[in-house]
Length: 146
View 1: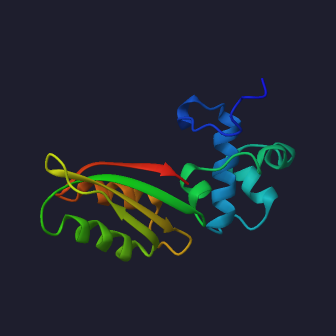
View 2: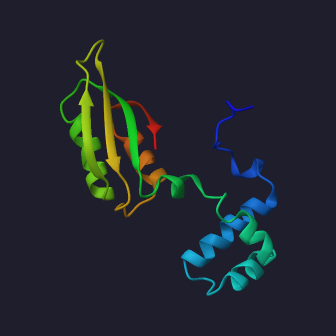
View 3: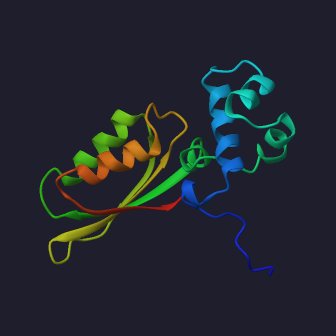
């Protein structure tokens, strides 16, 4: 069992309700909808002890990546402005690009890897990813590491 991964990405609806409530309580504290842990726990209908038991183990996906280095890989069409458009999306979001690597285009597409520091973003990682995928020259985009 030592080869078991330390973390899993699990769809929220598959999680036990207590985990979703703990995440919501943490959000209420961050957004100042609740002033204390007791207020946040009461707001979502859990005990303070349940909150403290799981608070360090439960985080939304975008929170886990916030403040970290995230690597994106995109397949871009070989057309003028395709790379510029995705780099502009990073700039608008407030992500700090650390590296850009691009392969020579073959069959009309090029692989581009962008590594960015995301702690200064004004948008969520999901919003940035959605915006990147919507760019006209993007054939495919995924997060490789974060």
